[in-house]
Image (cartoon, rainbow, N blue to C red; front, side, top):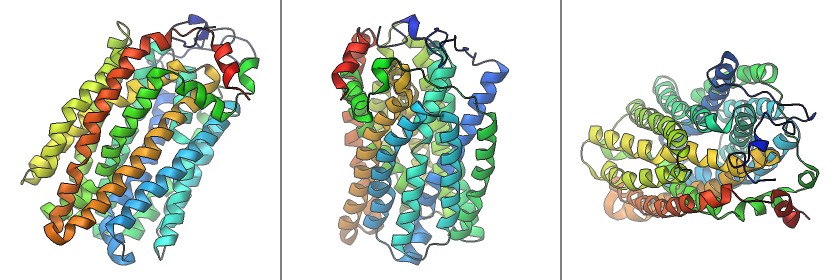
Amino acid sequence: MAATDEADPSLLPSDPAAGPDRRPREVTELSSGRGVFIVGLLLLLNVVNFIDRQMPFILIGPIKAELKLSDTEIGLMAGVTFAVVYSFAGLSLARLADRWSARIVLALTLSTWSLLTALTGLVRNFPQLVLCRIGVAASEAGSTPTGHALIARVFSPQQRALALAIFSMGVPFGSTLGLVLGGWINDHANWRTAFAIVGVPGLLIAILCWFALPEVRSAPAKAEQSTPIWGSAKYLLSLRSFRHMAAASSLFACGSYAMNVFAPAFLIRVHHLTTTQAGLGVGIAFGLGGGVGTFAGGYFGDLLGKRDPRWRQRLPAIGQVLSVPTALGAWLVADPIWSVALLTLTFLFGLLYFAPSFAAAQSLAPDSMRAVASAVLLFCLTLVGSSVGPLVVGRVSDLLTPRYGASSLRYAMCLMAVTMAWSAVHFYFAAEALPADLARPDLTGALDTVRC
C-alpha cells in the first residue's frame, strides 16, 4: 500500500477501505452546499480560536501596567508557557480525534477555551494569568489538527489545499478581530471586560459544531491500529520532506509569533499609537496580508502542485525570502503608515507557507494519522517557534532598554529576520524531497518498524 493518497488512488476518501464500515466514504465537493457549510463552520471556529489567542497581545500594555509585569514575563506567558502546553496537548487531542470523534473533540475544546478566556478577565496576579492561558492553550491545541483531519477525510486531495486555506484564513481574520475588538473594548472599558465579552460567542458556536459537523471517522488498517503517538511521529519524521517542513515551519514561527506578541506594543511604544490604533494597524496587516497570503498559498499550491508536487514547498521558500526585507523595513521605518504597510507584505509573503505545508503533511500521512500529522507539525513549530521567538525578543528588548529606551523593541524584532531567511533554506530542501516521499512504498511495513 502506498504512503500517500496523492500517490495511490486507493487511499482517496472514496476508496472502500476509507470508511469505518468498509463502505465507500462520500467525497464532498468544495463548491457544493454541504462543502461550503462544513468549511464555513470550521472557518468560524478557527476565527474564534484566534480571537481568543491573539487578543491578549493588544492588551499587553494595560495588563503589564496593572499586574506590574516585565517584557520577559510577557514573553514567558505568551511564548514558552503557551507553546509547551499547546504542543504536548495537541498530540494527545489529535490522537483522540483520530481514534474517537473529530466532531466531539472540536465542540468540547471550543467550549473549554471560550470559558477560560472569559475567566481571564477575573485574574488578579501573574500566576493566575498564566494558569488561565495554560488552560486556553491546552484546549485550543485540539482545534487545528482536528480541523485538518476532518477536511482531509471529507474533501479530495485535489481540493485539500484550498479547503485548508479557507479554514486557515481564520488565523488572520480571527487575529484581526481579536486585536481590533480588544483595543476598542479596552479604550472604552478595560482589558478585563474585553476578555469577558469575547469568550461568550465560542460557547454558542460549540453547540452548533456538536450538532452540525459530520461524523467522519478514520478506518485504520490492523497494522496501524496499535501505533502509538510517538510511533506515528517517528514514522512522519522519518520522511525527509516532513523533517525539513517541520524545521522550516519552526524557524518561520520564531519570527511570526514574536510579531504577533510584540507588534502591537511596538506601534504603541515606538510610534505612540493608542491601543485602538495599534490594534487596527496590526489587524489590517494580519487580516489583509495574512488573509491574502493564506488563500494564495492554498490556491497556487493546488494549481502548481498538480504539475509538480515540489511547488507545494517551493512556494513557501519564495515567500520566506521575500518576507525578510519587508520585515526589516517594518521595524526600521520612521512612519507608522509605512510600518503597517510593510508589515502587511511580511504577513502576505510569510503565510504563503501555511496551506501548502499542511496539505503536504496530510498527503504524507495515512488516513489514521490525519490529525496526528498536523499535530506533529504544529508541535515542532509551536514548541520551538512560539517559545523561542517571543522570549528572545522580550529578553533582548529588556537588555537594550537602558540604552535605547522604547526603541529597544524595534532592534530586538530585527533579530527575527534571520530565522525567516533560514526557514527558506529548509522549505527548499523539503520541496526537493517531497516527490520521493509521496511515492514511498510499503506503508504497512514502515509502520511495523515504529510500532512498539
